[in-house]
Amino acid sequence: MEAFSVRTSRLLLSLCVTFVVLGLASPAFAQEAQAASGASAAAQWSIITAGFALAIAALGAALGQGKAVASAAEAIARNPGAAGEIRGALILGLVLIESLVIYVLLISLILFFLNPFVG
Amino acid sequence: MIARIARDTALACLAIALVFFLFKRTLAAPLGVLGGGLLIGLSFWAIRGTVDTFISLQSSVSRRSGEAAKVDETGRKSPRFALVKFFTRHGIVALAAYGMMVRLHVDPLGVLLGVTSLGIAAGVEALRDLRWRRFL
Image (tube, rainbow over all chains, first blue to last red):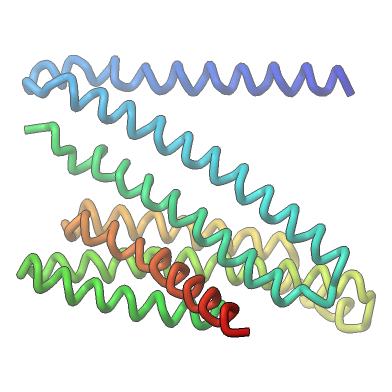
């Protein structure tokens, strides 16, 4: 069990490092083109921020939705007669969590493609 | 409850589209609101279908009836098929958002307002439930 958790934590750490490196690499490659076009540094930072915002939103929503589904499954297993009501509450909760991710997706799309900081 | 919230979401989306059109006086504004409503509707549809499939699977497995065997034989309600549908629908949501915002150039603020229509409908439902409980 301990070996499993150490391996899992190493895997998570390496994934985080990979995301950070990939997140920093693309703006670094794009830096020359940005400088050539005379765009401001705010545009680059907005793109980095959008990527991180989307990642954090997806992580938070995944955790929240996982917890909601686990609780609902446990509740249905305890009381199968209340499955209809639990189903309704579960769907509503999942869709509300999902709507927050869609907000972040839209903001990220705005920052990626319709960037207001790029003149 | 879910059907009522879906209906309220559609009504809220239409109302917001009308108000936003009166505010902006351009066609892109209400189209953006309706696009946001479409996005949240697609997401709603995806989640509802998946939850329904998994709950029916869970109950059919726990019952161990002949119907469960039928479901397994046809394979239409297998968890794998449900997951494929779920992720395909979310891919459609992402593509629709990209197409609306980048290709069709609808109003981004309108799209955000359209997505908010579900929150408004859920709030209205919560208020309705609260008021109903007070008089019980």
